[in-house]
Image (cartoon, rainbow, N blue to C red; front, side):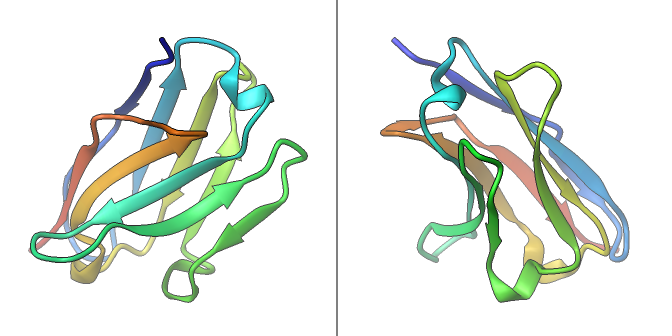
Amino acid sequence: QVQLVESGGGLVQPGGSLNLSCTASGSIFGVYAVGWWRQAPGRRRDLVAAITTTDKTNYIDSVKGRFTIARGNARNVVYLLMNSLKPEDTATYYCKSSEFWGQGTQVTVSS
């Protein structure tokens, strides 16, 4: 069974930065694209950024220029580097590959 584990969430002030990590238990990231999703309370879960197996990336407009999705040197890790964070970025962030989801990591942007 594939397991995805996110880490790196926390509380940060507006304008701050956080780096999220998603680590897979196997080599699934070499076969499938990886996406970072987020869900705020009372809202649907939305795709924020994705990276393909050939390292092509896509972002939603609201995070372009602020967030970067990237693979680690260890091919079972994918990062979401988040800069210039805003209160509206507050959500639980999940990674997904194929049909597998991580458990989520909370990001709170507040002064």
